[in-house]
Length: 348
Image (cartoon, rainbow, N blue to C red):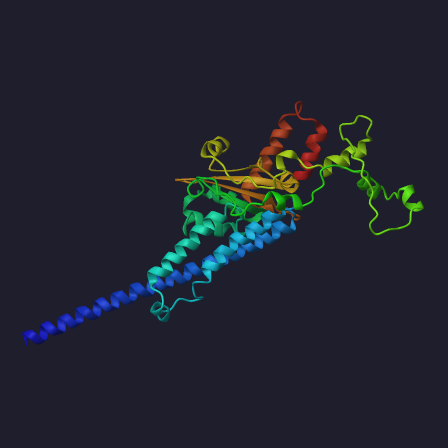
């Protein structure tokens, strides 16, 4: 009887161990499937955002940058395709659970890395990846109101994380000198451009026979010439490329000292994007600085149109508008009336 009881206890103990191992393995598989699904959604959101930014001509000064970003995201796609849509026990016959975990770790690292170049259009995805599943717990109620405004009315472009992007994340490919020369960009106003804008046909072209290979020598217009008409100077200013932004490369790197100086005693601050690389960013661009317990996050993005003034339904926005109106009404002498009236009109 004692031997039989000992055998039964041993068998019971073995069954319990198998059940525990099964539950542990099942939990790990479920977590992996959940992570793979999130990674696929994250990548798709990045691709959608990249397409949107390209349609907004954000990469028009560097044709290669868009291709470079596509190639970076393709690296992530190739890794994701190594994982099945749904990991099951049958898959463990060909690959171990450790192998799938390693692949998912590499995918997460690449997503974090390339988010510095192009973020997902969903800011919640971004915060979940960089901060964690329970990222909401890191913010007060007031800060959550600001986050709500950011998620609704800011279209993100790139993100910098002081923990993961401590060193500058370089783009994976660079144009060669011959490739960069092959991309034609206007650098100054020419006679041809002016004639095209004014719809003027040179007299010598009327007298000459029309030939397909006819070429017109351009006369470069000097924008610094004081005798140059004002409207031509304006045209020249629009077409000439700004030397500071001629490279077409985005500036996505920040420093903690720089961020702390801008944040001051606030945890979240929205300011004008001083590192903008395009005209649209100069006009509606913004940088969002977010302080967390162990790091700082900076999101570069664009303001969305709010045609119905829905933003005023957020308490933080209403308080900010009321504060601005009060300041303008108080500073009667220092603020010009025309500026105050126009500003208040815009706020309304």
